[in-house]
Amino acid sequence: MVTNARPSKVNEADLKERVVAINRVAKVVKGGRRFSFSAIVVVGDGNGVVGYGLGKANEVTDAIAKGVEDAKKNLVQVPLLKHTVPHEMHGKFSGGFVLLKPAAPGTGVIAGGAMRAVLESAGVRDVLAKSKGSSNPHNVVKATIDALIKMRAPHQVAFQRQVSLAKVFNG
Image (cartoon, rainbow, N blue to C red; front, side, top):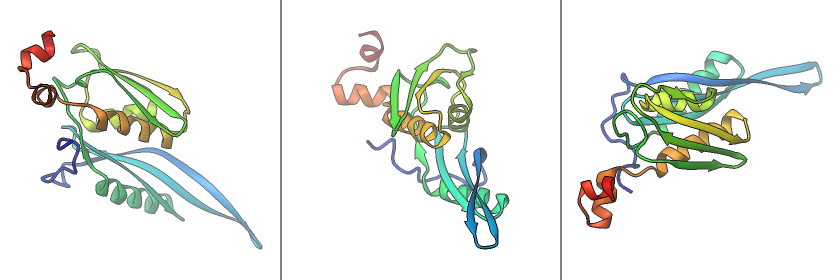
């Protein structure tokens, strides 16, 4: 699938970052507890390019910065059709399951926290989404990216079936 390859011409200045979750973890050492932080971050240009990353550090700001750098390495291109997803799709990662459905213009992003961050970063404005299974933000983000990667653009489907674009939509 060529459309889901790493986007070649993405200006890093256009990428907007959103912190999905920050987790404080403690390591018990001889002198007490040593705290560190992990952050899951989503970046996107709002026009079909999105990526996620995980950063871990002793300070929150450092963890977020590392997460942003990781996310910029994992960018993918997703097909959009009139600011919604082209068709219904299920995504899965570990225990996280998500369902994405196209919606009429003006519906908005009907999705929960972690899914909302991914979809808005990708540039989806109208979508119906449901998270099933795990509510762990890591699993939900990865399952949402999985669903977006599996999406196929209408012209791609028409080319593979060797039919016209109108036949794809009208059957």
